[in-house]
Length: 264
Image (cartoon, rainbow, N blue to C red; front, side):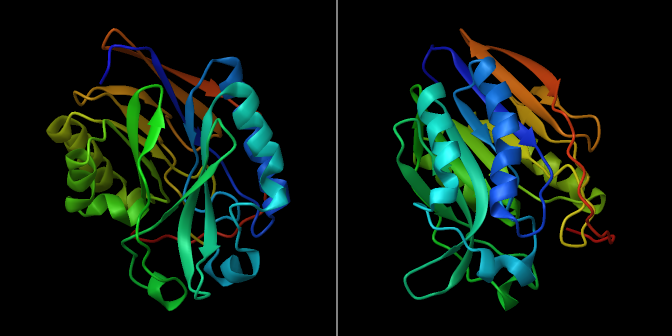
């Protein structure tokens, strides 16, 4: 990475099933706190604007220019921050993708679509094509969504294209947490990339999230992590190649979501 200050953040947030407008408002709570701390890049969990709700995904798909996103666009522009939110996205063929929308500080929106699906997701979603690298204060940021991170060729390809930050929005349960986070730390060491993992703070779509979002430095150090499933913001600052992390609480907004154990 270039020897410039870089401030990255992960939102561990919960989602109201299928309510994009309400979830945008929830996202703003995190974004305002992030802006107060000078964050330049903020990533949310997988499908954060709708919750991980396959049955509701098509009817709540989000277009990159949807007016519902305007509050987040204004935040990104005013704070000079790139904000990455999760949403179901329809392509030109009306195929549905698990996507991420990167709302950039210039108001432009870049789309990433999940390339690797979990078993069963293909009943609703179509594998995507990924998306472009993002530029944040001289850092090259590659995006990933959940199962993408379990395929080593995915971060390897990102690194080969020059990425020095790998940012993943996920839904990981306790059953998959140890193995998935071991992989993410390995990628940070192997590819010399800072790695960000934003997990849900609450059950969603019947799955019980493990929470415990995390940020690793580009040498494998755990810079910041959430101890459990409470809503909160993790911030990692790099100054002259030295990383410092912090965890901030964000007021919880309750939502009634069913639960089920699983092996994601």
